[in-house]
Image: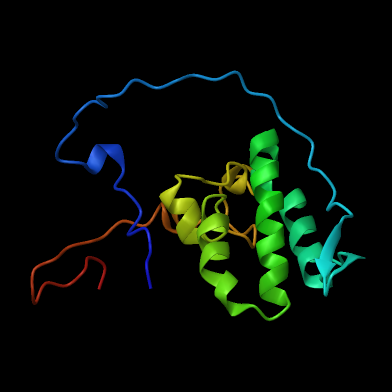
Length: 162
């Protein structure tokens, strides 16, 4: 099965720090509102019939609309994702040949943790939401054990006060 390889190293861990030979093109950002899944007709047995989106594809589409990535989607991103929804619908109707293309397309949007790592996506509010504490909100290890100090003594020595 083909893939994209491991996520890239962080810049400060790279041995070679060659500059990009091709300059970047900076575009003006315009956020686009997500479209609804469209109503349309398809040809089936010589007749035009209304296309019905599988319920699973409707849930998948709503998941993308609600995803953190969606706030960074422009109009061309939504159009590409809309075409991807048709592939998703094919898969959920039993066309397993659509799986590879679907996997490649959703990877471009950061669908899995590995995809997000490869795209260098991180969730910004993760540490701010709990003030740097774990999900439980309990004190950190540094707060619990920060005052402890290691006492070293040679073998056979006794701690003072014994």
